[in-house]
Image (tube, rainbow, N blue to C red; front, top):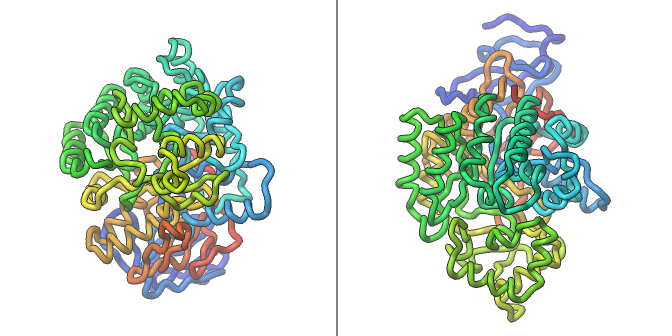
Length: 546
């Protein structure tokens, strides 16, 4: 039995649980003492005087989960005029990850972050971010320090780190022109990126299917990734194509990593659309070979066969040249709509073309503030009900909503998802797009679904490995010092769960239902969830990666 620890030293004792520490090591009994927001691991049954005790008998205790891929940047940033109902809807979105045990979110993914930009570009960038994030009039920031200051601490229930979005960076320097940057523009982007990374941003992200990121060539990304490499931080990419050209797009990402020296993180790895089903049989071995050849490559994955994104990404990239206002003006013209129909049917070189690889019947509206009645319904059905061609309906919907529409795309196959989940190179990220409406259930269910459905019920992953993919592996990848592994001195971000009961409850019809079996969540040493319900604690902070 260990030494008695005085009450002045221990604020919280987690007693009687089975520790799964995040390293992938076998589970073992242990008690945890928390003092000053840090953990001490004790032999089971150590006599401890504590201000507060959590009885974890029959439960598993893990590090707080790290969601490596979110789009939650704006949830705790100031917004404009809003009603009490708006506040309630946004608070429900804020709570969804916490209730499944996520204590740290990494935002700024797919090329979109709330910073950085040249001061003169901020008003133009704000409109783009409004359409991207859809939570009030989002205010872009000049750099990471300004972003951190704008994350209101009284609203933060968990921690947040952020990548630097290449699309934001590009728009914040050169706008939405479909052209290569001039030398001075590329230099400005590199300088802004360098400053943000020095201030604590977690890496560089690209979204190469989204304007303005899609207008960039490989050379531009290599130049920026070299800046990330100098800071020892990863290049995180939504590939240029995750469908019929996914293997070619993966080769581009590997080339960027090799030439720049930056660690490579392939975002939400998938092979979507009927022309790419089964391609994980080739992409995963290719990643393993690249890693064996010396490229530091990993990936993340969410445990669903449907994705989610913005509706205007279903249109050819040329439609968004010049920004949101130019997009909306184009969509009013009949000849533009006809060209969109032709491009979807015939394809455009270098464009992913989600609809052409699947169809409007596989795409449902997730959030459309101007047409709430459309949420949860497929585009093909909505268009048929109005007697419209789907492109006509989509253009009208975007115009009515001022471009602010998100969708869910049912485009993947279960065997591909399972292969990526089981890969030793993958970690878990929700890719949550938290907007009011009917968001994808992954925002509220991803981590519980991996533990319950895929881990326990399907036997795809042992508990220790599943937890490692949610904690220790992402903490190591993104240099989240003191997080992701329970050891002496670690940050006291903890989850207490019932391994026999944990399961996701969120569905496409009710996407924000809280999971079952997650009893207690501790954030920075304070109990943020007790008996599956949130407390008033708001202990989250902005994490700076040094």
